[in-house]
Length: 71
Image 1: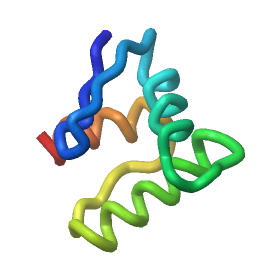
Image 2 (image 1 turned 90 degrees about the horizontal axis):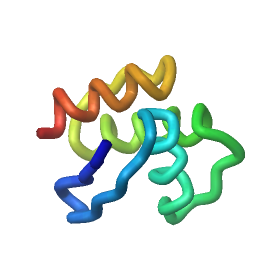
Image 3 (image 1 turned 90 degrees about the vertical axis):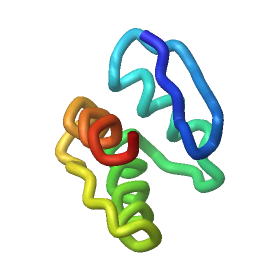
């Protein structure tokens, strides 16, 4: 499946939401130990700077919220 970050104009192909979050984490300026740590920080930044609340329970819910709330 192809995933695109609209604001950053970056795209990638990933097998699933988990692989996409891993790609996002590895391309972030900060270093995170795992996807859950990244999701938590990314969700916090998104709320802080854009007032967008994202579900950070797991990769699937996180990506689903990204698709709904940032498209």
